[in-house]
Amino acid sequence: MLTLANIRDYLKTLDTGAEHFYIGKLESKKEKSIGVYNLKEGTPFLIPLGGIQNKSYETKKVSLLVHWNNDANDTEIAAQNLFDKLLNIRNIEIEDYKVLFVILLVPEPQDVGTDENKIYERVIELEFYYKRKEN
Image (tube, rainbow, N blue to C red; front, side):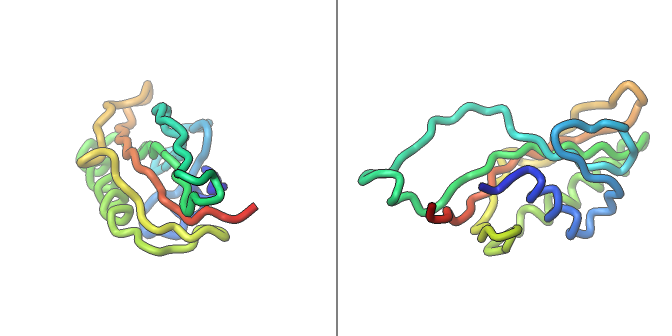
């Protein structure tokens, strides 16, 4: 399965300007960070007609937190830069998985205000569609 760590490591290869990447929890709250989280959105588990063996792809729903700096404009630009890079993902490899495409679930990075240290944050929600591996 495609994991949060796989996605975090892929994001490190993009020219985002981020200096720190996290999964699960943004521990130290360093500026210019991107956090990768499972999207907490319930969707039904779908099995195609004929059984699971006929399923050719899997999905991974992810929420990205862009935790940037104390300048709202800088944060907006950094988040939009990441958003634009994600928008163009087609037929790439992440670890041993062939990612066919992603669907962005929001029309633009969502402003979620500032944290307790007045660092601006934006959130991008997306879904990775990748080729299913045979068991």
